[in-house]
Image 1 (cartoon, rainbow, N blue to C red):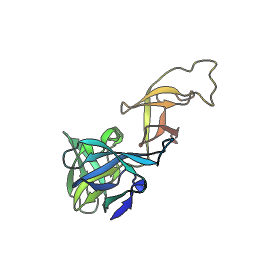
Image 2 (tube, rainbow, N blue to C red):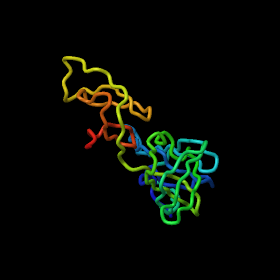
Image 3 (cartoon, rainbow, N blue to C red):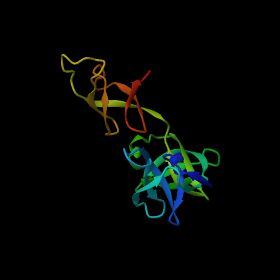
Image 4 (tube, one colour):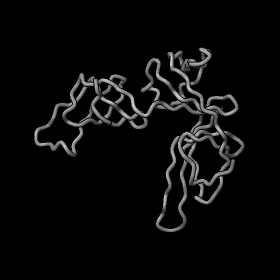
Length: 188
């Protein structure tokens, strides 16, 4: 299905130069002179290589239709994630590289959404938020205002994030899986 380049979004699968690509990031750039264009970071589905491509916003690209299927994450086996189909209880092996850096947010029995093109997994989405424990947090510096200052902290999965000054080590917080940003204190 053809679509305008300015409608490309992360997670979509497109066909370009005879190959299939999954879109990782997109950004519309409006230079001071000339027309706007979209810069897209994408990964080749077969080789795993990343590339950047630019299109004018009026250009068209071929978007592949994806089928979505829910799986339950079981465990990691080497470079693969072992997922279970909750309906048939069959296991599926999917390369961990498909998730990129978000693989750190996978938790046992987490429900994930896998996008398939002709039965082949091309992308995977995690829930928008996960609850994790803070294992390290810098002490509060006196004189900082609570409204604008955040301090660095390390989560139980090893990812670093910024948290408000009142959050301390040992507390559980909700973080956004997309960018590891703080959302709120976890409700127990």
